[in-house]
Length: 292
Image 1 (cartoon, rainbow, N blue to C red):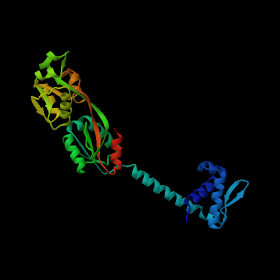
Image 2 (image 1 turned 30 degrees about the vertical axis):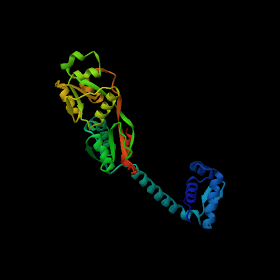
Image 3 (image 1 turned 30 degrees about the horizontal axis):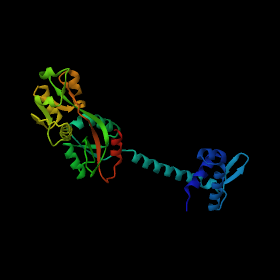
């Protein structure tokens, strides 16, 4: 049986012309190099080197006859290894991502652009829907990774910790300027027109769970399906909206909206990465997840 390591040692000695230098290049001891040469000579039943005061010289009837072919064989093996390494390090294929419109816009857009610049061969399929829609798509193997509004408790998917924190706040236009620089209780908010997400959303369920613990029930005058619509209504003065601060920071900075200070503050939520259970993760997806 061919022992490639013996031939690698042989070629290194031939190239260096010295047992000592070969040992240094191979990061092994000089006796180990010498033993490998003796073992290969025994297998081939021929002398590969002539030991001289100048070092190791290839023998005319042994080493010189095979050194060129050994060099070519090792080069081919190195090329094959490089091809495999390059293949593993090159992302290809398609990544199917499930998320809400807001998560795509506020959490994923920049990451997708960043990934595309590094791996332009990878295609993306963007599947928009509610967080619960994304959970269903993960279970049905219709998407490879989901970015979900937390908390989610579903044992059929694997969900990571938060990759983005969300601070839910109440925001309003100057139509409700009397609330500026004041702190009001959650209970007092019921005196104003409220805009909340629909009941089938994680954000609304999280809010309802929190207010229920306080013995408060907030009723929505307007229910919306996405944050963008809520913010448009809020800017027009249609009511006070509950929205992640991270999704409306530009409007707060510009003064188009202001934050209504409440007590107690709403609990921090997050966006998490979810994967189908028991599915092998392709290299491209691993690289994309690594961005977070």
